[in-house]
Image (cartoon, rainbow, N blue to C red; front, side, top):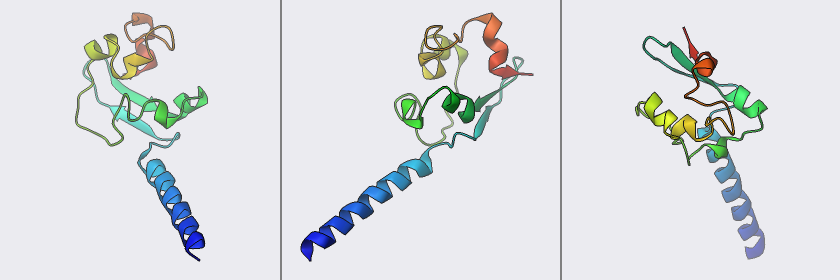
Length: 108
């Protein structure tokens, strides 16, 4: 009886861990908009990144926190290899500091 109860508790704990992790993750179909000045807003598409084979835990929480913050993303930080710039370095993905690629993120 104790073994069966221990097994059920283990399954429940595992299920709750999976559900809570997925509950905080941004679904692949969701987009996030970052307002910007003269260069236009930036729209992050979870679907585009998922289509490239990325999973939520590739960026969260190592590069970005799991919950939305008020922290401002600055191009100087991205160009220094922080945030999006960790992958968008011209090797893994197009570089954040390449003027020819600005319109891939910034929309007027």
